[in-house]
Length: 315
Image (cartoon, rainbow, N blue to C red):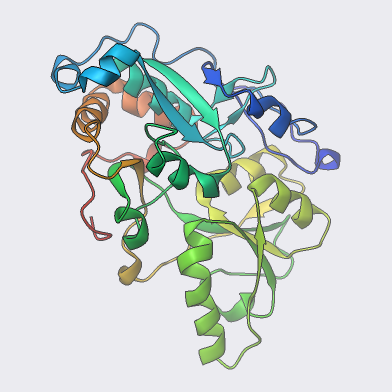
């Protein structure tokens, strides 16, 4: 994988790319941010449809000839824009492979993370492959299919000068950024704030920001002291700008009540696309393509074996 170094002066905007259709709003949404080159080539080129998955496709989808995937292209290495303004990343690769396995074309819509679910339930998009895990609230309105195992970590300024650890009270009283609508904001931060309170420490100050690029900018400038987000995105930032950012160890050790760190495809509740999408995803997992897609983004440790339709936050 070849990448362009991040410009700290450009707010350490970690950006990215791939081949696929992007909505008209995408270009304007990302003007002025840094970009990077990702993995070369369309991983789905030459991939043949899976007959069992195609057989279950709704007639309306077959007639339409494509499926639309909503994701925010601002989170390398999973979904971002390349230097040539094309979608790229692990989630983009999976979306392309899913479309190929279903014998359909792919349309990618670049939208803010916190508007994806509303767009899917409102019928504007067919599905999402983004960094979204199952929660009780999401499962009320979405069908979800597990497709890889992620985690959450704390990113700090280079060298972690304050010796922050997301798993102890060192973060109490600190300004820690989380992305709006993320699992970290919705579930983990309240838990960590309660830990500070129980230890009679100053409350953790959660700074809610629209995307990780904005958070990296604020961390580089000293406006915040850490970023609590998905390990993959923070690892990418630290790799791109190791003199500016550090990925702290270990990952967030979340309590069992929060389930496991599986990331899932999201579709409308009771969608007729859910079963064929599950079969297509399992077909990808059963082939070398799955591990190839993970490995070319440095995410091989997140491989799982089964594309399970999620029924609760424990699976």
